[in-house]
Structure formats: C-alpha cells, structure tokens
Amino acid sequence: MDTNTIIELAESVNIQNEKQSLTVAEKHPSLEVIGVGRSAVVFKIKSTSKALKVFPPEYEHIASEEAEIYQLLNENSFFPKLYQSGKNYLLIDYINGYTLYDCLTLGIPLTEENIKEADFALKLAKQQGLNPSDIHLRNIILTPEGNIKLIDVARFRQLSHDHQWDDIKFMFSRMYFRKYSPKKVPAFILNGIAYLYKKKVIQVPLIRLKRTDNK
Image (cartoon, rainbow, N blue to C red; front, side, top):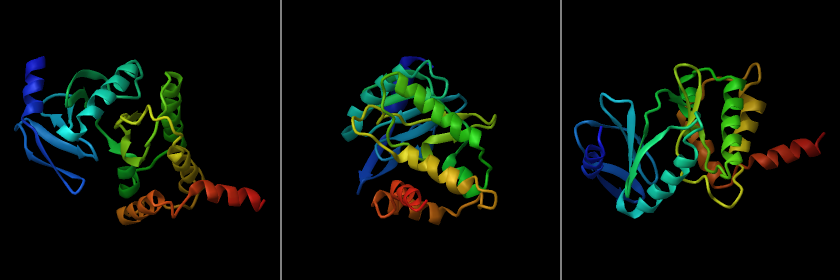
C-alpha cells in the first residue's frame, strides 16, 4: 500500500471523544476496529498484515512521540515494526494473538518463560535509552506460535519510574504460577483489581515489604 492510500485511510476515520471515552463515528470499509485505548483507536487493514493506529486531534502529539519510539525499537523483534507515520497515525505490524488479559480471562495457559520473555524485551528497550512505562496485561500479546510481543509504547520515555511491570511479575510468580492457583480469572475480578490498583488501594510493593518483614 502506498503512502497516499494510508493517508486516505487515516483521514477517513472520525473519532469522537466523549467523557474520555473514544468511539469511531466514521471509517473506511477496509478498516476493522481491533482496539480502543485512551488516546487512539487501532484498526486492522483488511486483507493485509498491517494495523493503523489513529489519534483524534487532541492526542496528535502522542502520535509523533510514539512514532519516534517505534523507530528506536525497529530492530527489536518483540515490538511491531513501524512502516509509516503521519500527524495523526502510525502504520505498524498487525500482531495476531491474545493479550495476557485475554489469556487470564479465557484460561489460556501462560508459562514462566512467557513472563521472562516479556521482561527481556523490556530490558532491551531500556538498553536503548528508553524507560518503559504503563506496562499492563492488555499490551502484552501471546502469539499463536507462543511468542511474546509488546504494543503501545507511547509512554516509554517518561522520566519517572513505573513499577507496574514489577508488580505484575510479582503477582504472577507469587500467585498464578503456584501449583494450585486458578489459571482462569473472571474479567470482573481483574477489572476490580486494576481499579483498586490504580486508586492505590492495592499496592503490591507493600505486600512484598510486609512479607519480608514477617520472615
């Protein structure tokens, strides 16, 4: 697909932002919505292996930031490759698979190697001078081949330390990978935990600290 075609597809998208919730009002028929985030909507371009991430006007500055980060990561096979970008869009690889969130809610088994692979991918990003932030269950994907891919890198240059990924690793090691722990978790429980975590009602580092103190 040439540059003009991609620009036309991006321009066909009309995203409405109501109460900090994005909805697609218009789009080209060849675009299939596959993800709606806080600042952009992701489409699969039908009959291709590409995804188009489109940002509404108020978030266009994030498009250029994320494009620069993807360019830095273009040799890192754990992340989608960036093919083209514009003022409000990114053209990247379409990653087929299930997010870790999907795996937990559907009962798709995850292995310790999967978590180590995601951790290794983030360490490689750090070696390139980035500071991976806002890592959560919905932006880590398990492919049909059993490989790990990461998406949504817009916040990889934040200055502050984000311990969210450390907390996710901690919960997997201390709970999910225990012999008799459930491998399928209802969505309402995961969403409830995420809400309480965001509100800092649940703080995994404090749990870890208490366990250390009680030894």
